[in-house]
Length: 184
Image (cartoon, rainbow, N blue to C red; front, side):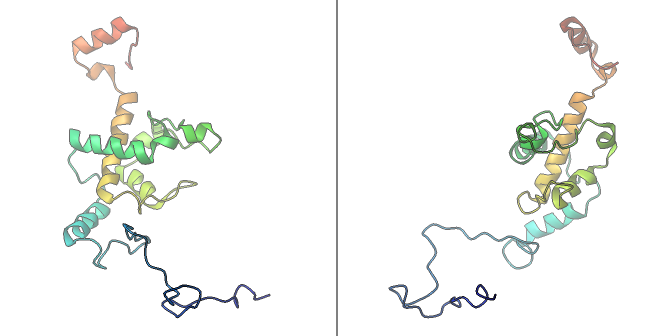
């Protein structure tokens, strides 16, 4: 019953008659790039610079988005959202992405009252830790990029729930003439 446990195997750097160089460990393929993963990857182990670690600590500790919402931040958030979130959450953030349309459970719409009222930290934590069937993206999306995505989600929410009364008169007139109306 212990065949797998007792199977023949090599310890790292042990000698081996199997390979011509006599070594059981194989050389890395040319141009390969080491990739660290796990909870300690990119921390004080020396794989990241001190500035990046300090920036990540500040971003991880923030309760609200620590970055000023600028066009550059929104564009970065849109880019990261398009890569990591759009397949399930859809371009509009309504939870009807292509993955969900093909049978995967639909994520909640960002436009629900519950998520419009949720603090920024909620979205950051969901991306960091996962939620329900969504897995964590902490190993793929850096903390500053997670906050950029949060800013973009807020822009999506505003785009779908904008109050027409807050628009300038010429924009309201254009909406009225186009038949799109708008929220009163």
